[in-house]
Image (tube, rainbow, N blue to C red):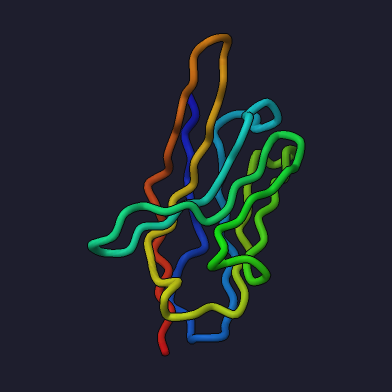
Length: 119
């Protein structure tokens, strides 16, 4: 079991920056992949960025060059640095953890944090 708590959301003007944090209830060292997803009203949840246990990253095309995902294993925390924010980045941002134990796979989600970008 992994509990995830996001923080760092808020209201920012277009062109501004925010850093989201996701604190896990256990060591993230062995969690296979952690990531950030977002969901705007009336839309499906979409991938923003992921990072594997060995530091490989993947980004949605819409955020490449503007967002950076990182992990601090010592603090059991994953970050999402968001720069050059646009109004279309407005969403609830969710942290996720994907864990493989033996032949079983587990997905965990946080409660989400609201990011609002004003034009």
